[in-house]
Image (tube, rainbow, N blue to C red):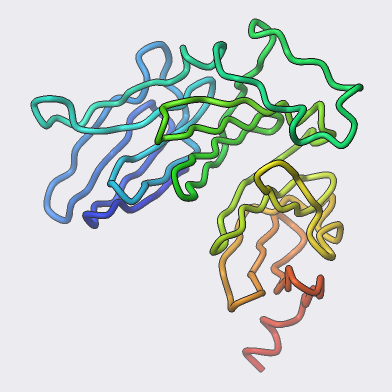
Length: 232
């Protein structure tokens, strides 16, 4: 489900059985992911220091060497109830949004993550968890209260962090706002499962069953025929 490469060139794979597999080019290593459950590992990423982050069903955290140099998983799941909620900072009208009691915060299934600068963004369908690595702090955004009920993936394209919502389309996540990208509503009700950079302002968007598109996030222009044109 998840594949990433760290700064040392090692490949990391997450699967169904709660095990992360590391391959350094000559040796395979199995690392248990979580002690409480065998989570399906759907999200993975590595930062510039080589620390690998992961997420899955009711579980998220990171892998780093312990004092003896053995790579070990460190769960952050138990810290989630004490995360600072910042949902209101993303809302245009804060009067309609109440903080979520810690006991009612759903982690759900972390289905993707991205890393930008010193922050790791873990995202589930209705949950966004932000980990600031510099100050070792967690923040929580209730996406459902902001009107985002089915957020499928989060992507980093250069300096942009883009949320793909199954119902409303493509949005850019900024420091204190979630704003629809130009033409992003075209991708509403299209499950966007892949996004790859194409050039400075365009990305390739792959959907579950609606095809592959070339999308200009600056102008909003969507091209659904570029693959046929390129091979004609």
